[in-house]
Amino acid sequence: MVLTTAVLAVFWQVQDFKFVYYDDATYVVEKPQVMAGLTWDGVAWALTATENGFWHPMTWLSLMMDRQLYRNNPGGFHWTNVQIHLLNTLLLFFFLRAATGREFRSAAAAFLFAVHPLHVEPVAWVAQRKELLSALFGFSALWAYVPYARDPRPKRYLVVLMFFILGLMSKPMIVTLPLIMLLLDFWPLERHKATVPLLIPEGLIPDRIAGKTRVWAGLALEKTPFLILSLIASIVVLHTEEKVGALSLLKELTFWDRFSNAAVSYVKYLFLTFWPTDLAFLYLHPGSTPLLYTAGALISLAAVSGGVWSLRGVAPFLVTGWFWYLITLLPVCGIVQVGPHALADRYTYVPLVGIFVAVVWGLSALAAKGRLLRWFILTAAAFGAAALMHASWLQTATWRNSESLFRQALKVDPDNYVALHNFGLYLANTGRFEEGVSYLTRAILAKPGYNVLYYSTGNVLYQRGECTRALPYLLKAEEMGFADDGNRRMIGDCLRRTGRPGESLPFYHKAIAANEKNPENHYGLALTLLELGRLDDALRHLRAALNLDEKHLKARKTLMALAFEMGDTRTVLEEGRRALANGAADEEMRHLIERARLKEEAR
Image 1 (tube, rainbow, N blue to C red):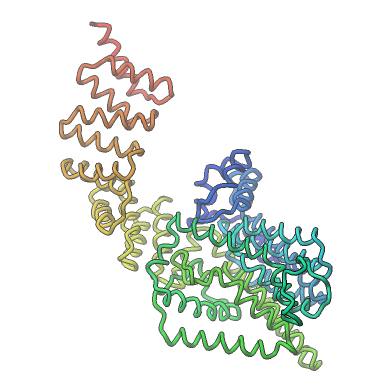
Image 2: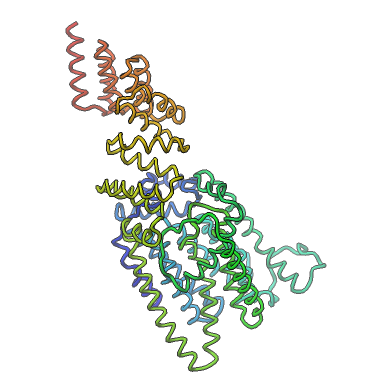
């Protein structure tokens, strides 16, 4: 009851939240399969889709179900996140209680998991449904692992394996779960001391291996199917992330840059765990990290690891808690860099469970040493719990809409070019055009070497019809290697509209070479060719545009008008019939058809 109340108290507000202008669109409103709701075609797509850098069919199916239930209400999607987070909290409690037999301590650790400000991001951000679902099935697997570990049976093993597979199908964040099971074998399950037989074939472990080594070898072999699945999932995610270009920084940053950032991030996460202030949706990667910071982080991590290991006999919970944190953070620590961030709040969702276990069990051990100390710890814990809930409530509010989200990020880092860029696009597309352009230009000043920023600024100005202002940005993006057919077409359009049709030709040809299946590229070139008097070439590209999109109204009207001027009324009537047949005709086209019909009858 307390856990449920805590979760609802912090996250009840999300029912009024909007989608944010950062990944939510690509996961929901711009994804036609999701917007169609739960359909058989959608299910088939979800099982094979590798869009957005992951193969995560469970995530897609979950979002489709939300669309089916809530239609266009973003608050419904948010509320589902809260419900999954509540389930995760309860599952964590049930797992810890089953594994340790300690109800109050398990509840305390689950409470910290439920209301910690670092855990707000995956709950309040619809696009992070994958994080929640991965944890849901991961915690389910661990809860199912406890009875299996105490009485190994094939059916119980298969249940654990099934939950693990579903977790990987949500997000491969739980690839380290087999190693966590080994930690649990040490504490609290203590399987290395037990004599329960393992489900591995006789003779698989050589006879020369005996004693504790033999037991640990057996426990490790027991996890082999899980490890194989983890390896496959890791290979798949590297492939899918490469496909969407998310690993570009992997090539730009040296291994030392990535390793240094990972080491410092491990320490930074711990700092934010105990002092969760200045949180934001994105912390930009610094590139290089000062050697002193890296050395300090590595020494700190090594010292804590050594100290924890030395206490394994008297405080084994510290070993499981600390190494849970270190191991589960490995896939997202930044050694394999995905995206522009140095670290992310959502990445702590599962790893911090280890820290919470270590803290709760450690404080409980201290409290047992004296009544006064126990009351002091309980009082401090009560104030700490209230402070965490208040901080989480405030942090959740920053996710209310795009503006509150980006303003918070810029408050933390005024030069966050990703926040500036996305905020600029959001403002420009929601009626605050000039304010949006000002944020886009600030983003360029913050990150002048990033060609996407020039393209976005040029595109926003182009869509507004301000070609004179747009052209320098579009040309700069092209000069910096932004090889996009849309950018090149817009350059051609702007040159044509500003009276330089001859200069636009090379850009249209480049656009068509990059994407010959985009009808807009052919249509833009056709208009330029018309201005240059090359009518036959213009007709050819107008027909190419219509072959790609038979409902392209402007291309057909232009073709019909040109044919009419050339006296080819038969073509006008033929094209008019096609337009009427597919419902792609307006009054101007109908008038042109009527004129051609009268002219044809007059003959």
